[in-house]
Length: 188
Image 1 (cartoon, rainbow, N blue to C red):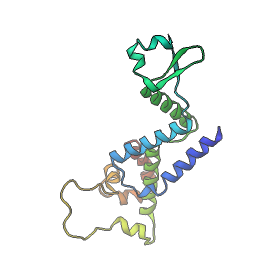
Image 2: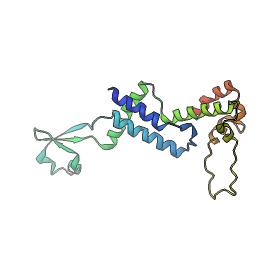
Image 3: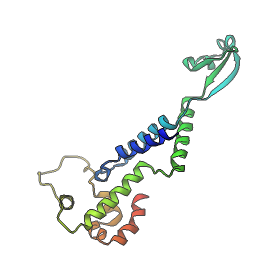
Image 4: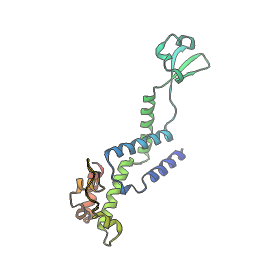
């Protein structure tokens, strides 16, 4: 009904609040997509399907493959055992169902929404004529000595530079050009 849809909308708003400030790495993208799919399964999923084994309860003790399922067996009133669908099949089926529902409602993946919000925020901030703190922070270079050993941490502007170039702030000042590059950034 409408309740799961409203919950999905509220969850997306809550999770993505302030997402334009994230420096999203591939690992975090996986976490974000996994969390979304898990929530959608819980809201739109359904129950595990049963498969009638065609064997009476007494015959199951001799069949090791069905008996090994253990707690997944449901005994029906007629003496036959109904075996629940395998867990991986249930997860795949309910995930596909939830994704179809969200697609039919026109709701985007959270990672795509985050990229779109970040791109638009970066463009708006770079085009700002005044000296807001957000614009001043774009050019800020921390001065706390030497960096830590190891791979450098992903910076907020790294993915913007990958699409728009080193001088992405200058590119962002041209709104039409920046808007044309948005599809490249979102689909990267």
